[in-house]
Length: 266
Image (cartoon, rainbow, N blue to C red):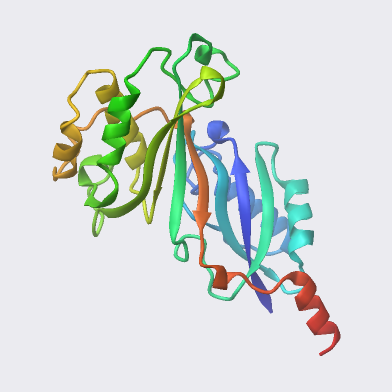
């Protein structure tokens, strides 16, 4: 008998080809599944809430997997962090009801994109984790551009691939905020789903608007477009973070303590 678990995973995407297993290169999924196989002595599959691209980081990636029933969430938490490579870290592990799936069960996902506007953004201690733009942008134009995204739209104009069944995404949150210590800006976006490179294309286009390279009206025009040829170049991957994912509360199982107590009195 096996139980389903959810791990909240953080990782530095610098050394990975992305979340998903690839024919060549180091993937987050490959590292995570190798640890599961070592723990359970059998092949185990891990599913992520979002398939991040090469170089993209995560602060709250949801990862679902199954484990033998004698494993508790606390034991898994300790074991995963003991064996995962140093550029990965599990923040928490929860027991979930049967049928839970990190991607299919998600209600929404939230990403963040960091941009450095100050000269020190080019420092090697920052430039790996943000877009070192190192020049001013008009934040009022960025606010206006982000506001046009709220609601449900066809994002074909901001999608890297054109073979999806549909391109509609419902945007719940879209805003720019100033980062602490005058270090620049962060773009926060939450939606029911995202398309490949969609956020990076959105950020690249909005920054061009904020720098006066294209008019604000282009946002509405691109949302009406049936191709991505007029979209700005994608922002670099290393400024993007998978921030968090929201699941229905009823999918979380009873605590391991309750489960153990019930077993003792069965």
